[in-house]
Image (cartoon, rainbow, N blue to C red):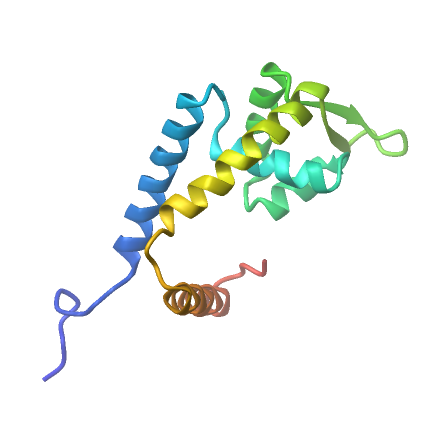
Length: 152
């Protein structure tokens, strides 16, 4: 007898619900500690901290966001004085994104809180279990890549 979809164990709803809960938790911790920064904004700060002045299109690619969605995010971050854009000297179609001084300070102060969030959320999970979950998610991602045009 084969299992129906209803009877099968599936990770998909758990992944989605967990991601949503993590977003809420991160927002709560950041707000409670005086940071007006979302997880997505923090990720952009992280990539700019690694390499300031990245091309806007490259940031869209590495953060898995559409160009339009990243442009809106960058606009919001500009309003918060976290980043600024500069048009490329060689190609007017290219924007480079840089951290402002306030963006650098925000990263320096927020980074330890993000590290503590990781510790909080993974508390009580044996390292072996974390490796199993990580490997399982890698397999799911590989399966998605096989079935779609996603290649990053």
